[in-house]
Image (cartoon, rainbow, N blue to C red):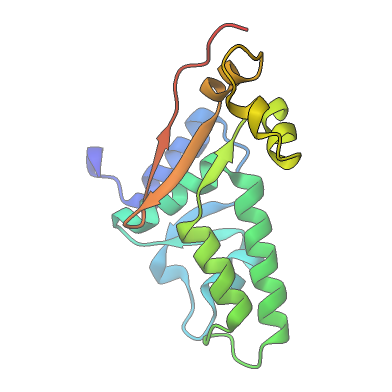
Length: 159
């Protein structure tokens, strides 16, 4: 990392400097006790064990950018763990949540776009000459690419 920081140090610094409303702090992977599930540790302590590598760096950025979503996914993971006989073997629910967490595309968009998408009003979403089409430039699509995240967005146009 730049400046000689570990990944968890860099993420905590970004959290502190930019005032992100993240419900967690980042700690070294060595803080995760043996025999405790990663997701349970986060749920119990509010600490995200973090290795020095791209995967955990981008996971941390997702915690900074999408704190409510990441917190909800972690809560669902903890619920699934409570119903499982083993903390360390993932079952179908935890597998599905991990796939969503690491492989889904997340759209951050104005409410008018969400309303049109939920209503399946495809015309309003893409028709030129409609007042909604320029709103796509206000959205941000975060997509995984080999466990790395990138945000594809245009600067917000004046509305």
